[in-house]
Image (cartoon, rainbow, N blue to C red):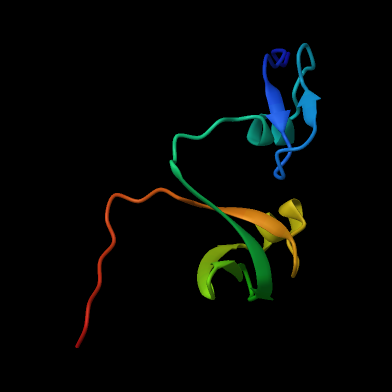
Length: 102
């Protein structure tokens, strides 16, 4: 039996609050109701989604012409409803960033 959620889920735009108090979560609810420890959360606008066989590349404009590209599964694109002009957050959690040249 699922345990009741004791949390509030904020919409991406900081607007309305969805109260999940006392509601038994589904698997999808457990994913959307979680809090994350990543501090690098950058708001942006989707400027393109290119799906491949299993992985999609999502281009996010984060301001001043800077673009981040995330490689995520096609399933994640569909679950999140990602499309051009959508508002998203790029969440970055990395131990290090490496650069290499020939």
